[in-house]
Length: 567
Image 1 (tube, one colour):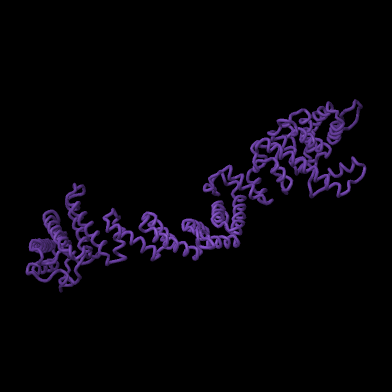
Image 2 (cartoon, rainbow, N blue to C red):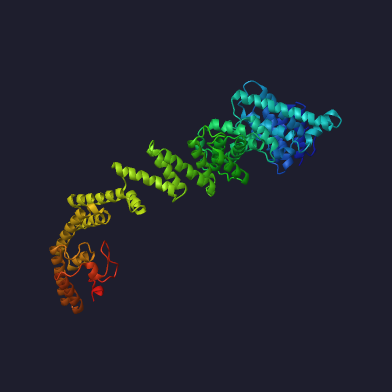
């Protein structure tokens, strides 16, 4: 392409030549020439598709914007650190120095884009892994290679100047360690991958929180991280890996907590260590073998002193609870926690019954079926029965199943079912008279089975009356089979109530007639035989029909006449 940049005709100018002219003009402080050259480059060649020309163009644009005082524009044009190797080192160095000078001015402690620009440029120039072009630049300016020891000293000095300046700006702005520009600078220098992006600099932090937290942990600054994070989020119980506020830092925090917990175990700070391990687990950490051993050591000592004086059962239970949650499969921790809960449950039995119950209940959660814990709760239930406290019927029923000889439970259940039956009989009937009467019979039947012998006869009489009333109601409103079904439940023995026997006898007779009309002579004969035996006052149903006295429900398909036992 034929272009004329000096007024001389027929001179061919390339993209590289234009950029080189621009760089030389900038370094000679001929800034009035730089912009026209860049504009000509853009108009003649557009966006270059080669890395070296595009990066050289970008850094020139950034340097020119900085020269004009437009630092956000300079940050926008600055390439990432990985691409700065294509840019001219003189321009990079000039821009880096200008950025530090800018930050040194009063009131610049919040210019995040300028800080990001300085960090990226100086991290590139002072790269420890590669002497790079900056070393060559210094050697060129000295007209002799820089001795290695002198280079290391100079590099260390420049690193310290950048660090000190950024730290001073952090202090002035009140930025904590996570948001500090110094942290971003150290992370950018130490990381294999670039983490600071000048064009995306955030006033609240030049790098993402997770990267900042990870950097602090990797460089042994876990105490700084935990102090700062606790100041930001005082409620450590809310630190979980699923919480949006904590997800970014979860990995770094959990590692820092696990490391601090091990330090605390070595220092004998058992409770604090277990708390740290617990928080680390909530943040998603799976404890390593050494960490699990540390948990066991803390669990063995938490709440105890070397002399035995000043032992704290509450602290021990809380600590063992944490250890059990961390190591749920460890039987030794579960056993010790259960035993301690039972001991403290017994100790508080009279002085603090509510706490005592909680201790026993928690022990059963930890070790289902533990006899001592179950016994403690049963003792509380017996005390409730003695005092006449309000109690759950299922709890009393469970106690009676475990201890059939418990007089208090048997009496309470008998009274409960009897009272319920009486209430049912007098309550407004919403489901029909038959339903109410059947419910009363069921309740009184349960009361008879449970009531102690001294009270059984009275309840038995109430049941007999209830069954008779139900049988007469069924005779008048239902089928003969319904009356017979009630009879076969053996709730009233034959011969106890003449009215009941007559009602059942009539039911068998009436069903025999129905079967005759339906063409079932065999069934009719069996029903008439049953009616005759009941009318003759033969032995009770248990002997007639081959089953023992008590509450027995018929199984599906059982012959409702009971004749297999009779004949």
